[in-house]
Image (tube, rainbow, N blue to C red; front, side):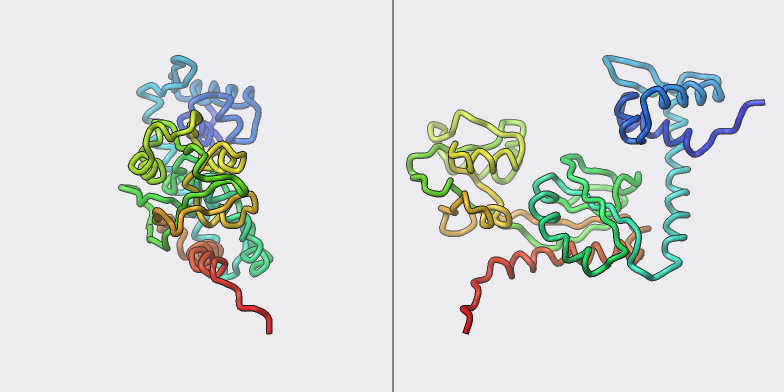
Length: 293
């Protein structure tokens, strides 16, 4: 008699489908690659068919694999709903909440100010996930997402919580008129910062360096390689940088997303309220300080 499939088996199927390789799935599951390979073989034996084929280094699902992935997703949603219901039985702000955003928002906006939230709720634990991908709320990859762009579709609830200002910065002590402009490589010309540079800076004024990451652009300006359009929330706090535009040259909207099943959980609600208050906190940080009496 064949052993029945377990939830742990279905998690392996989902990880392989989402990550595309044995090694990546093993990393996301926190196990070794041999364990993932052994579990996949056991599932395929139980179902009497191949679930994945290897093509150009990636695992692609077969027809049976597609069916298994869909059914595993349904089980994942059911398990998540059960865990949510169990968590909601209490009203204390306690437990773990996962929040994700692009690296510059996590590393430069969220983490430096996170101490206030953790101090307010001693039993709250936070996973701050810096990822350039849009992690899925519906698949349970994150609880809350902070994004620059409003999603066109999806099962999450979203609301605009404010806008972040971007200005032109130079390395402190340098002559801005003698510096070229550092901008993003062509794949990222859809970024508002890159579009602003393309519309306002002649091609012969561009630096020979192109960047594909916001924090890399900050480092380039800090290192004296040129001018750049940078977020005020980070650059104004950096003593190595100085703003050279009289005012922000653009603003980017900030959107807060959450799965509908999670928004009523006290720990998620507390984290959402804190994230939603970040634009107002930035405004307070930027306001001139009254001199001491």
